[in-house]
Amino acid sequence: MKRYQKLLPVGVLVLVAGVLLGMQLGSFLSSDNAAQSLRKLQTAFYRINEHYVEDVDSAELAESAIRGMLENLDPHSVYIDAERMRRVREDFDGSFEGIGISYEFIPGSNDADTLTVLSVIPGGPSEDAGLLSGDRIIEIDGESAIGFEGEDVQRTLKGPRGTEVAIKIVRPHYAEPIDINITRDRIPLYSVDAAYMIDEATGFIKVNRFARTTYGEFLEELSALKEQGMQRLLLDLRGNAGGYMEMAVRMSDEFLKDEQVIVSQRGRLEESNQVFNARPRGRFEQQPVIVLVDESSASASEIVAGALQDHDRALIVGRRTFGKGLVQQQLGLNDGSALRVTISRYYTPSGRLIQTPYESGDRKDYYDSKEALFEEDATLSLNEIIEQVPDSLKFQTDGGRTVVGGGGILPDYIVEVDTASVFMQELLRRRLDHVFIRNWLDEYGEELHSRWDGEREAFIQSFTIDEEMYAAFLSYMQEEGIQIVETRPDVTDGPVFTVAEVEAERPFIETRLKGRLAVRLYDYKAWYPIIHQVDHAFLESMKLWTEAESLSANY
Image 1: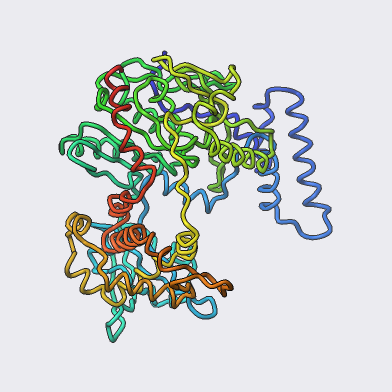
Image 2 (image 1 turned 135 degrees about the vertical axis):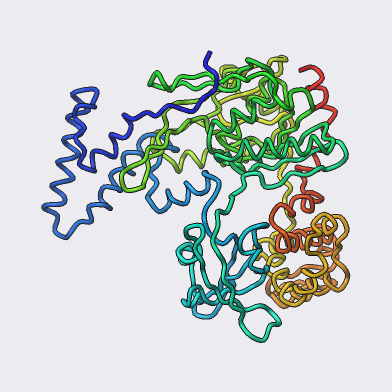
């Protein structure tokens, strides 16, 4: 069997684009029918350009034709235009060159929003230059930044490493704007959101996608947690839509024994048929593992969850995953755009195809069927779900447990969605916690930065929302039109909640306020140790270590 390796290019698939780019492709076509179809398409393209009543945008016509061809294949074969491809490449290459901030827009009059620093990336050029969360950027290289949109930010703040950008900021409580020069640098985009010790024995790692750097980041955090005494791991893949298959294979390898199958793939072309096996001396082969997943865990995330479930290596906890069992090859075109074309299906070690069934080209029906499946899951127990699955889609793990294919990874332990109260839905929908903390930092930011600068762990452990801050938040909500009353009136005008309803949510409110503050004082990694205090799936998983330890003991 082949060891895992980078997927081989499938060059023949670039034919789809070549039709419309004037390439001489006849010698590559595999049949007379294909050649005839190509000539037909090419003729139609030229005749539309020559004879249509109005001028035709050839590039737009070509892109429409490419999209049309892909729409008739499967839901995951897509065309990515050049601009979006640039952003995708940055995201999955794991870095870009710029000033190192996350930002937001504060709404202004006449759609003239203000670009505002949400947080600065630790160790990046903006932190070195002294930017702070809450700073309003009003000029960039002499150009007004008021009314900027996302594309304007990318255009002006990103740039080659070593180049300088001059910005002018307004800082709350400062009488005059401040001029700051920042030298751009390479800015890492981390795929590991957070890694920390939950308790003396339990480590936590949150992975948000599988980029080129993911395995290295994961290994670094895994080693650091082991040095801190980690004896068991909670791996969070919720919301992780996937990425590079190779990174999922390498991560899985760290948990599995030598020669155990991680995943296999089968396609029409010989080079698409591969089996990926684990290598010896994985760094976490014996210790208990729990993997958290949900309906947004897809593709590479499902490879990891499927491999560890089929080998009885980890306890999978959460909700049924997305169900993407197709492997795409990314094929670049000459203008920087790309095709992402399905070249094979992948199968878990027990032989499961976890791809959700689809009709070619019908994306709406595809996603509607997923939504219906998730809703049905919410009404059934794990055993009830398994019982109604056809025998052809039932498989056995190494230890004889029943697992199912045909639409995602079904967890070993299902955690129901923690439905927010009507009050919390209103708060979250309007992002009132987010905006309040921004306003609070405008008022008290200098004091908070001075007190807690460089004290991330101390902040997480000891900072509390005091009565003054909580009362200010209640007042802010009422200013925003949410009425808080002792007794609900028979007739209401706008959102009305009782004091008792609001007080029942106080732990959740205070936790979110603290978490939002931590993100702005430090970075997004500080969010997780705080929000986990009210994270239903996280708290449920922490009760399941007996089951996870039983799996590892018998592995």
